[in-house]
Image (cartoon, rainbow, N blue to C red; front, side):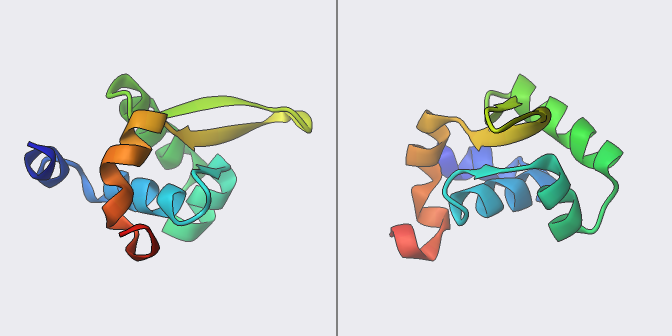
Length: 88
């Protein structure tokens, strides 16, 4: 079942999930935009879609309320852990 879910994901979603898994489960949208080489607007749309699927969540950065942190939802982190080689 998990393999079927992964195969239905868009490449952008897989990139975000992999990036979060290999970066302690968190990143900023700006960091994702830079790594993916796409606009911040594209990342925002992607994150909206991923939030609706309960893959990630966004919350204000406690150190700077003007910024947002994207976090892999805990259950997804556990289920997808083996996508990151160091977690297998």
